[in-house]
Image (cartoon, rainbow, N blue to C red; front, top):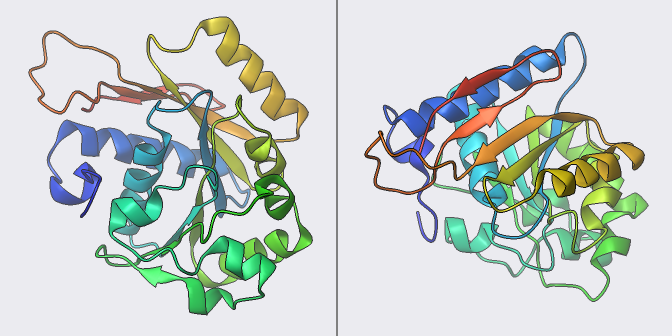
Length: 236
């Protein structure tokens, strides 16, 4: 893989991989008879690890025998094409603005059953595109083809894009960088998402330092707090 260490794909026995499996299991328990086919991952601010979380979560979902489509809706700072070494000539923006068929824009990744729809050419009006009826149609079409549609959203605070799309997906996972975001700010982001109509499934606490574990990647630990209790896993 280029640009991103997909630990869940490259090292199945790593504690970080198990942490992503814990998140996967928590999401499955959160379903409780409800459909959770379209999932979004966002953060409060940039550089908290949401794209890494989305990519690795997509991988562990495929390891459970599911087909997954990863969408790059962080159209102001897209990374999926870089992380997976894919072309960004066609993507979400071309599907919406030029009516490019979904199947023509989707690309296979090197992970079995994991597919990607990159951002496409960065548009001048991401919020309008993400909030358009055509975007809703794309999501509906995708959910009929894939078991899970996993969306890498932009951070909540700099722009309104995450709020626009977070309201129309089945569930949202919020990634928070430990020591990087104050508690009051995180609570404000949670309220913004809820007021927009988002179904917050839980929180992943990222970049937690642990002196007694000698892991070399520096990613920290991940904790997932579901809506009906808490479960946690440790990873890099």
